[in-house]
Structures are given as structure tokens and as C-alpha cells.
Length: 142
Picture 1: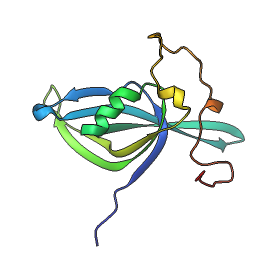
Picture 2 (picture 1 turned 180 degrees about the vertical axis):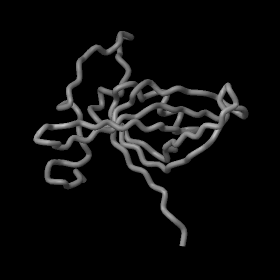
Picture 3 (picture 1 turned 135 degrees about the vertical axis):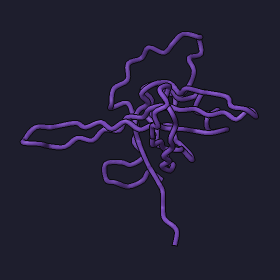
């Protein structure tokens, strides 16, 4: 029997995707994703944020580079991968990443459209502006 390696995250981009083009024209995009959870500790509300390294390949990377931006809310499905590399001092380092298999942009449609007048969109977004794929009853909206 084989194992299961499945990651599902909903969070906000920590910065714009960094896009690279490798040999053979392969596109790769990466960005940090913040997920937060809130809990009570000693009667006080505490928020804990985790940062995840997200990597997208080929067509998925191309779509991410066009539509994803720092602060946007996304749903990501993928798998964990750990790789090693040598830093400048030739010390072996390890990094764990989520290799995305697909993603869904959450929030209002206008959050992911380019402004029509060429100006940057300066509308302030609040947490209430984002749409969750699950309503308050826990039911999916479809």
C-alpha cells in the first residue's frame, strides 16, 4: 500500500510570485503563503501564523504570475517536498515546500482583474470582503 502526501491550504500570499524560466522554457513560480489560526490561551485570543513555501510549475506557474499578487487569498492543493542544496559557504541546507497541483483564487472577481485604466487598484480590502468556499453552516455552496 502506498502512502498519501496531500496538502490543502487557504491563505494570503506574503509577496508577489517570483517567476523563473529554466532551461527548455520550463516556468517555475514561488511565493510564501501565510495561514493563520486563532485560539484562546489563558482567556486571551491568540493568533498564530504559519508560513509555507509554495512552488508552481509550467502552466500553473504562468497563471499564477498573471493573477496572483501579495495579499491575495488563495486555496492551494499540492504535496510536500523536501529538497537539499548547498549554500554559499558549502553548508548543506534543507527546505520543505508545497508543490502546488492546483489552486483557486478566492475573494471577489475584481480582486484578480487588472485595473482597466492602467492605474493600480488602491481599494482597501477588509477580511469581510473575502468569500470563503464554505458558508457558516459548513456546507459547500454547490
